[in-house]
Image (tube, rainbow, N blue to C red; front, top):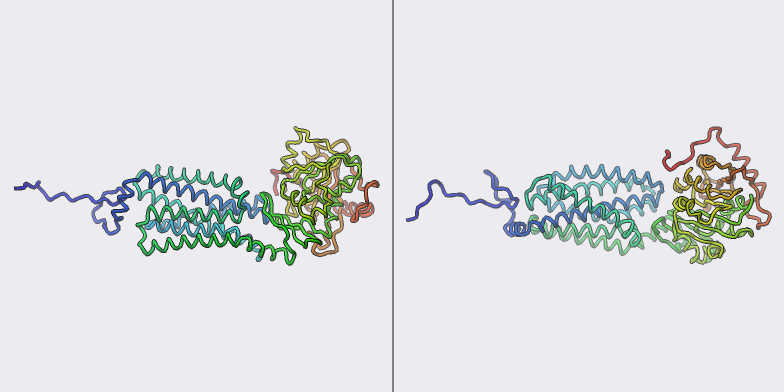
Length: 549
């Protein structure tokens, strides 16, 4: 006889797979299958580590997308501060919106996470090519950038709530500890992505292929977590669809990578017209495109800005160089910028020049000026002259260190062959600090010549910076080309310049140098008289590194 304990038999406890005991009225239908429960129970630490690793990878990819958008906006439009501010502010707002929207997806977090990662991989991976195409064909870059940034931000914002739900399904634990671990993985991933972008992805792959590679990594990371660790959540039919979607995303990214060169060529053709693109590259600093036939007029574009127009390039080069070389000694010359070798060609026409130091931030441009037959011939192979020493460094950073090291100074002439802010140049190269550092390297009686662009307001702000550095200035202009294709500024293509020195510099031309084609003493005197009459009674404030823009 078997004696039973008093009372009804004990009801066996059912493991729900989430660490919580059953509650009265709780349905057992949605319980996870035993196979999944046993896997998660047998190695919960490994499963949890896999989810945290996915958070790490997704955070790295998300930050790379963000930096790709910032870098592309800087390349195409300039004004780094504006582009960075727009991308960051829109991205953060969209991430908050994505977190709110993710609350509706937590009932099936694994399936939702797989869909989010596929969408994010496709959107982020194709974002650079899409924006470059919009800039080239449509011209509505800002609208497209804001739209893509918002979409990417929403998808990134949806990741954390879904990952948190997945962690809690593996093992119930204190919410504070789970949040701390998840955010630690997220922040460390952001650190790795932020460092990998400038030092690895950008130099080796460039923005376009870098974004496509990041998208592929993103898709694989999402699929690895959902379709391996949580593969029993979706129904078999849904799981097959998710696999197919992931493979489709990888296929689309691979096809885009294979056709990226063709897309860039077509976009350049739309941007540069019928000119034959003979050279195009994306360095760490800018996009360099050289167009024109093998023998004939060429055009050089830097970040889409027409920097050199073959039939007309001598006007800007002569205007920058010859007035500065005529006011006194010219044995030692410092050329800031000018990696194309054209201003350097004009410097070397003066017989008194003994040494020239060229400082350009992008080594790819001087390399092109040496190797391309057309550009090398246009510059008279000036970069190969034994009197020239080239330095690959940011001009402002080089000036900052030159005061302590001497750097071969003092110099009789300093030439700033750098685009004005109105023409797409960085403000730092026309700031009061920049001119103050340059003035320290001048020899007694030395001169500084500066490109001031085609905008009169910009001309006076640059002049204020030179005067704040303790220099006297003389504005002058060089008439533009009769060729419409070579007019970078106003309808007449006039370009403004400034000559500065400790004492009022004379505007003249050196009698011992070959006469320039675009300048005469009369045109110099006439242009400075005209511009002086237009000088405002109350000059604008000088540009500074910390001042308002």
